[in-house]
Image 1 (cartoon, rainbow, N blue to C red):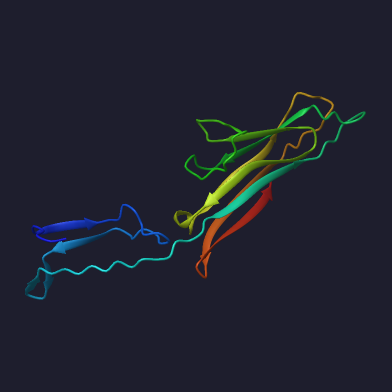
Image 2: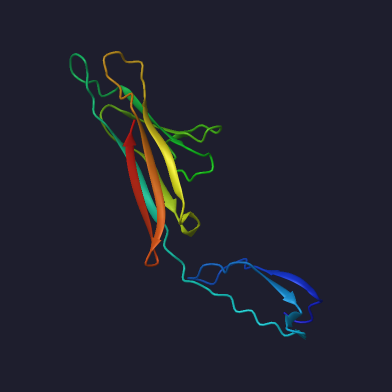
Length: 175
């Protein structure tokens, strides 16, 4: 930049260089002081860092059918809800799930026993150092011939950085 008027300037980057993270914004004062002297040639060399690969986490649930009598019916619908502790927490991507706009809770369903997933979470540099807490529960259905899991599971996801690699640690607690 040249011919700047005296003042305080915020330096930020709109688009990072390919393969690099954007620089962190910083302030520069023109002119700068060096003791009693004023310096009008300000050199700013921001530190750039290599971009990091985002990490993903899938959060599946498994339904085991326990019918009180007879043979399990594979057409019975079973639903599960994932509720974030805070509405601004990251949520998994799943186009077949329904999401409550007020609470941010996500519901997935399946017919009969087996595996169903809430979807895939994606975590990046902005998530490093943060811990997210979610509740997972089975919703009680209307079929009186089946038993439903009434327990709630607390899932904690901690995002850390180790040796320049984003790490995800999960912890499950049943209540």
